Length: 262
Ligand code: BTN
Image (tube, rainbow, N blue to C red):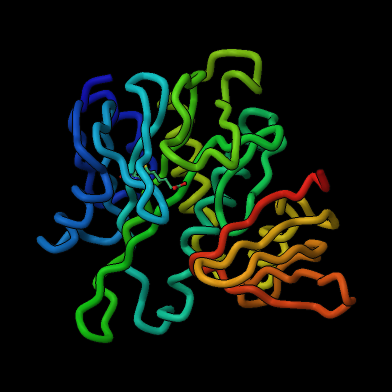
């Protein structure tokens, strides 16, 4: 797709700027640079071929041109919404789920906090990065990588989770640019819900492994297991430990694994 076509496709999405290039190292890096230069709220950075994508926890994000969607959205939350900044990542995961449900008829789930799964396999990842000027948030870059066509590569290091793609699960070939349109359209319809009761309810409703046994692996510390109950109004994971007590875990750097009991 050339840039003129892309702009035509997205003309009804309330974007205030678009930067598109055939190849980029990382759309998040490009978006962070643009934010420094004064990008407005609702700016989009998109590439067809991302060569050095970054994932959460310093991992790489490997994506094949034509087979994936890789883009970053710049948002500038009002100062009053500072406390809601950590929820842009799960909001984006939720938006991807809703777009896939409503427009493709799939049943995605979220691996807490914000990975998107189809049939238990990772299909999309979200990396949000906030830029601060002292206590002022200059903006948040929301980077989204979605596997549209089958991928032969893993997502670059998170071997705990198998990967799949939208086309594999849908059993048909979806148009990448329509998927982009649906995700952006859903994002702009849903963004006002961030931090609301509805938002937490829908996030919880989409959680994978609810009621099942999971392992929690803190960065430094002893892994533990428990039954996943859901999330609280901070987005913390609620887990029932083996002694019957409930532990609430903030996203931070913890890893979550489904515990098959083996
Ligand atoms: C994860 O680790 O699951 C998050 C992956 C996020 C990848 C996307 S692809 C577009 C954007 N640019 C990047 O460099 N990373 C994000």
